[in-house]
Length: 634
Image (cartoon, rainbow, N blue to C red):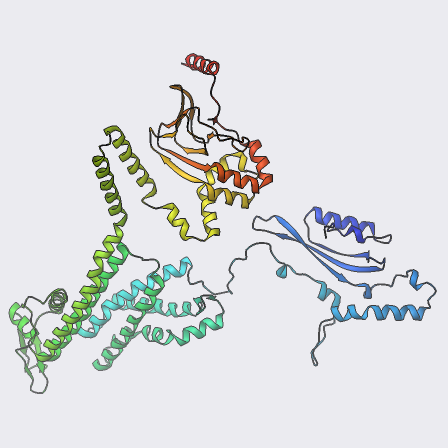
């Protein structure tokens, strides 16, 4: 029904003129307004309406349509006497009004349950009010999250996850060292640093209660209740155990050494966070230098853990607590004798064995042994002697073989992927050189071919645009093509009146051509089957061995084949003077689009002006005048 939105066809003799003007101004000024107006049905029955008009805006804040709501409020108005009621008594007219308005009252009045309090204010105002919070918007709705909820893919959360990853590596290094070497953080500076780390992990727990996650169906869950339940069921217990202040407990002198070691051991639970953080960030560190660095760090971290365990075994094996003697077959005893720091028994004092290598020397020696065992079979200068040491050495060799194959076996693959484009580039150059040599292509032409390949590769980096576009769906492919041809659409007035659908159809047909200096785009006598738009570079048009035109950025050459019935022959040569980028559309493709979009076809044929029409020859008189003008200028 193509009728006016002012509903003027429903106006009658009793419709208020001021209200009619108010309706008209509301539409013209794109305003939100509401009013009561008397209208007439098709059978000329008068009806009172409460009209609410609200403009709907799009992303550009332009009004694209109006939302009009009509509510019948005849039951709340004084009945209007029509011809059918003439001669009726007052009681009859009242009965008719009450009967006719019963259905309206039932629609307007909301359902009220038993025991529910009824508001004293007007039901009419409550039903008819259209607040701005429920007003629809004619645009894509941005994702909304409840207050105090953080999106898991936002910049802040990504940065925070990187911080947690770094602190987790820090914990993964210090915790095994402190547990194995039984060190207490009595230094105030280290206590402060560890306390700050614990506070950051505690803050991370709070943030996890307010961070969205991806559900099983792939949807983003932003409901606070579901987020809390999911976190409580998964990582909450581990995170809570990992952020307790174990270092503060260990700092007290009167704490039993066994309890202190237990608290330090519990802190190792924090290492389980490595997998969770890595899963969140795996899409940021695809194959490349970052992955290589991460693999090396993992290998070094494994060697560090093995070194701590290796020292713990040596420290356990060297002393015999029952006989208060020292075992001379332990690797720690051999190390102490080699570096000249033997163990000595303090019988008059503590009654314990003292001396031996320093902790730094012991750790470096342990790390050296584990590194040589992980990467090879060791060199024998530090060798296991006891049964436990030999069993652990076998385990290290097995783990080392697995790590070596997994980590360093992928290094070749990583480097191949990092330099895949470079390898393809050199392979292509070698193939072209062999081709030119095999078919004895002249030197001048060979140099042009090589220059073109090098120039094209430097611009495209070996990326096949057509191959990438074929991966994308049709709608996305059209959007990318519009972006790639944006310079042509913005610079030429012929495309200004094209609709979005028309631009998308045209963009899908455009091709980008890169030309090297000296390349001939058209030869004289060739069929002109394309329309070319110059995006960058310079070209010359040569007719009868004379330059008749110089084309540059923003120029268009080809043929007006949308006005001609036959295919034209080029009357001149078009040659590139510099490296040029041309956006080309074929004759058949353009005519197909113009036939479908008829309105755009008229605008296009009117507004597109060819800089040079290859169908037409330049007359001798024009060339003489052009030569005179150039001579006067020089």
